[in-house]
Image 1 (cartoon, rainbow, N blue to C red):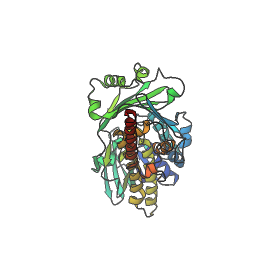
Image 2 (tube, rainbow, N blue to C red):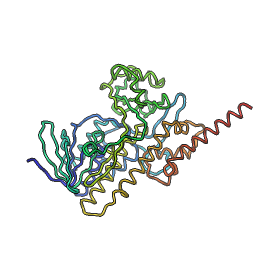
Image 3 (cartoon, one colour):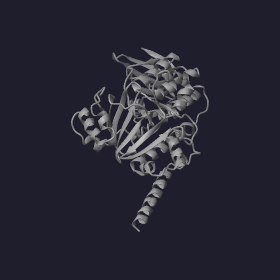
Image 4 (cartoon, rainbow, N blue to C red):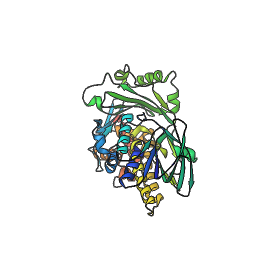
Length: 418
């Protein structure tokens, strides 16, 4: 019987898994990663947030990433018709990184995996977790390689960083419906043959073509650009034909970007993800913990995916290290509560985006610089800073702001009609 023993088994070699494993190996924990895919492989989520730079730096992965010449992201632009709202990460309420990157994920994830291996973490690619049994906190995981051979990995603890694969949620029946609206996405990467010069050609942009429908444009330093539409599932599915035909037809909705991308060749047939928001019944159990998209995936509108992946990956690794070292851990207080707080903050902003309240705040003129700085800190991923009232009061502050804007608009109308 092919069996090996480790302290911690990490499922998934994406950003969350690599951050987790890097922290553990740095702290002399015997850790191993199993990854279902062959790297490099494409996944969605190419826009990072400044907060994740803290995580890469803490576990020793940042220097390898800095050498890759990825497209620097200093903020983000939102368009709605003739209205423009720019956020500059250097003008935010919370102290922290003022920039991050826009990255081709296939290359980015591969660099992370290579650096994690260089640090001494073994990664078994093209190895799929097919079963797991627990005896207390100890586990026995069955893994199948591409040739169909089965091996077993005994671990004292498991970190599930499998992302969309959601290994343990599937095997342990932990999946539950998300409370967010059912939205889907269609996307690809283009050869950006009509890219403008200067900042216009490199700036990440979200073009709102309807309250519920928006286009992302994420340029990379290699001359390619990721584009994709997000909207209600019924809207995405209302377009017929091949994925390429559907995306090309949708591009006509964007008066700002249509000419730039109408003739741009696609590097792969557009992909469609249906009803992408997900949730789970619990994020830990005896012997395991879930990170990133293995637990909950919100919505790509604020590019929170990788940041939550690395935030939870790092925190989960710290919990696992304590458990391996027989230290007392309160996973509810030390993991669930802080993670859930961050999720709840971003979920409030996602909900208010689609209610149009947040869009009202973004495009209201004249701008309020202090309010914008506080929102910018949220968009930069600093959603645990409770000194920021737009974090602490996330569940009501945007509604209140939108209500005040509505009152102001109504008052202007009354004055104009006198």
